[in-house]
Length: 317
Image (cartoon, rainbow, N blue to C red; front, top):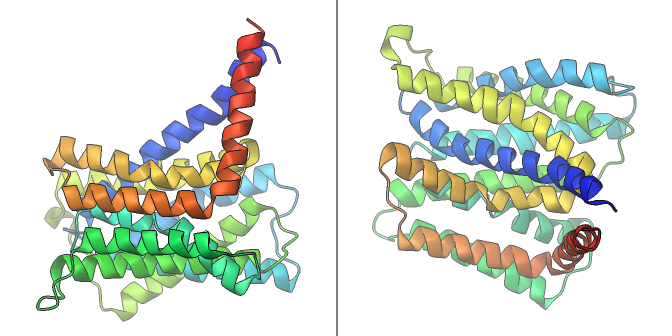
């Protein structure tokens, strides 16, 4: 591979990876600011309504088929809508009312760990003692972040618990989607999931009795924060996500989850003056360790592939 070709390959992967990490990492702080001034389920539903308004036309323009035709098409879209979007976002937004966004991002980073364990249990994928160790490390990370107090289960403990339920919901949706064999392209499945997930969240908001705040009651920083969450992290983020899936593959794209807490902590420190606490940092390292143990084989392959590309580029110079 020539130096120019190698640089082109790196740019097609590293640039969207970096931008997506920044977009999704910063969204946790945006959610934290927004839920202080508006109802959580309403915000989550509107976020995915905006994302769907961009992704559905994108799917129409880029994919050969948009309409589901089989049970697997419908099943995959429904699993993603109910669990990966509606369930995950509902618990994330509600939980972030009790904990900082940077803390929520660490808890959410357990979702790939939980996904791998559920896949082993429900899809008959191979598991071993090392996988169990990785899962335990992930749980230890959550406990370190939550620092539960048996005499006070509200506040941080409640918030971490809610966000962790959201991470589990995301994992259930990921495994549920993999249990189907849809003929629809991934972009089309996600487009329908966003439409369904947004409808479910907005319905939940109505049933919960959430009230739309008066525009005059919402400060400018909350409007800017939500615009970032909906447009940058939502619409733009998913377009970058689809590009990464196509160019880098699922394993490398999953690694974005482990850059999000770093970005979230940096943004929270810069804009909100929030310190990075030792328990949060330690919990994050435990979660990353758990993921590394569970996904050790795939990570070795990814690192080997990246090293081969780098060495090939160096040899051409």
